[in-house]
Image (cartoon, rainbow, N blue to C red; front, side, top):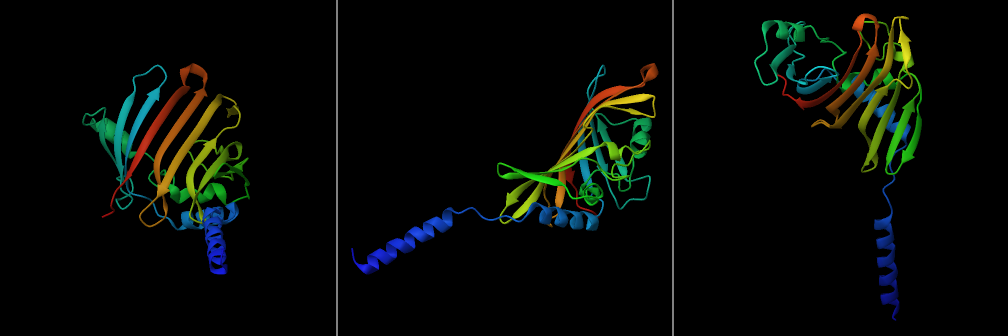
Length: 235
């Protein structure tokens, strides 16, 4: 074998090995810090949401709604249909009462859950899962008491080139607990999935919410809501 042949063979082997080596992705905390910055800069999204709501002991309901962040407050939600039918005036009015501020589902408030403490991140296969044992105050706002400190979060990152991209955010109650010594939360599990938007910012694509609350006088409920989000061009 001549020297040029040997050199060519060595070069080919080296090239093959380089091609076989996996792309080195960024550290998980670098990805989390980038997501926090992007989330802080993100505005309220415009979207159409189709939700399948299953409440224990009641018929399943399919709701189609639209959210326009540029509309006046109190007019940002529009109920398109319920079970394929035009909603009644009372149903439309009830839909319009939904929170129309930063509590609207979307990437824009993810930073409120992730920025307070550094998470415990671990690789599982090609993905990285980062865990927060407790959320900061008002991370999950509601009309009732702030339950954020009693909730946990898991963020799943998946490799894309040399970066880690947001795949999903799960917020959940790790164990049942009492609410105001009257009701009891048996289950809260919210899983939101994301995909890169046209501007590279993660966009919410789906969300599954499982809730089980017991309370006196039949005031509790157990339900599952599966929602799919379609982004809309803003006017």
